[in-house]
Image 1 (cartoon, helix red, strand yellow):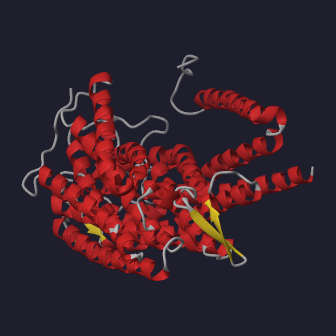
Image 2 (tube, rainbow over the protein chains, first blue to last red):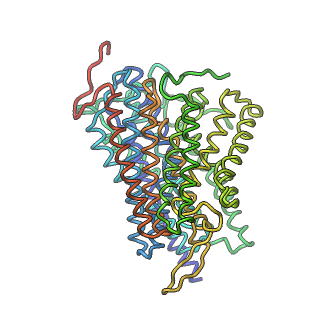
Image 3 (cartoon, each protein chain N blue to C red):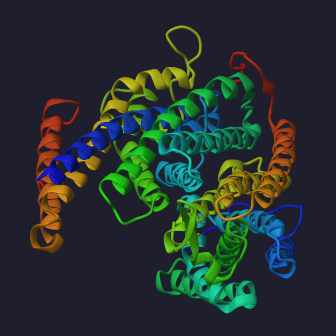
Length: 299
Length: 282
């Protein structure tokens, strides 16, 4: 009984850390225009819309965060193997991983913009200087919390995977959660505030992203401010629920049926969420946007 | 039907880069064998240089492959390379001194099979697919073997799986404290996978230039090498790890500043805190 209470406590702590991680990850990637919104930022100069948006295309978010978190976890593992206290080891590992992330961000921006010189898109050094540091700060929060989750899973819950492998798995999960949940707030909403809500992006509007702000020219910090309000918390909720439910079902039901209990509960959770998602989708289509009728079932 | 949208104009031909990358990478991995011959660990940093050579070659292979518009993200090519390369690398480590050569041969076979499946079974029909996937698998295997040699000082199976933990002054053998047992190989996988796809992913566009992309590839390699050198402190003596860190830092600083200069050369303008310039007709 006591071990289950302890396990639930760790589960709750990991879920809370994951919520912070998801929010930080999504804000970081939106400031850097990473993930699917990147295509429009990349396209804009080619359509004649020169902008001051940070274009940090490193990879999709899942592989990029797979690297940052695996690297942070690997370095933390190495420091712990050198008899350094775990908290300090995780901080040092995350800091070095963030250094790598920052260097990748600068080279990605310079490379993408220099390759667009045909269209007259200049490199803005102030964009590079002011935004790389902000993405690094958010990335540090995301990496530190996720590596801490991995350490808790490994050290407190006794997961058999070593820390770097857990870092790879949960890093990819973090990137996928932020990419799937948070990006629409930036890519579908913030970039196209001039278009009718719910209209999609017609071909004629491709690349015509919002480039001017309430005062002056919009930069990616404005986008970070916007997506931190809704996209970040939504991603945080998503990743927090993933981590919490995953650990919860393992801690509570693993003893039943030699592990099969946890698997069955996992399948039930997926089915419950499928029903909830479908209901929300139909409800949203009925109430918002220019859709007259909800699409046929099963589409 | 795929259409080739870009060609490599001028610059170093792909076959030259391929030959140079392959030869340099294998030689650098073999230079880490000087550790065994001299009984020190000071030559481990050559493993990192092997990875840099293979990553540079890999970035150009991805450019070569993706110029056909394969309809997928560039990063997937990097993951593909390491997914096929890790099998060859792990199997090859059982062959002792011959490991790097076995890794190259085995990776070539795995890559060719994957290329054949993509082209003839999945009907992708991209002319350079079989050659590129063969190259990518070899690159993946060589980068992983290079990082393995750099972090643990050896490219053979037993040293890669045997570590030791010190508890209260007693040294106990532990599988979990080894390069493979601790899954540092997963970190090496991602370090290489992102580093090999990033140069082309970052430099793609109408004004792509070969020297800028290859410099960025070297920069990514040295950057990965810095972190690998820090991780090698667990397995190697402090002096050996320090040599690795210094080599990596010097290489990284040189290639990073060179890359910024090349970006400055290629950029339309280099502005600091200036508004969006007005273009004619907009």
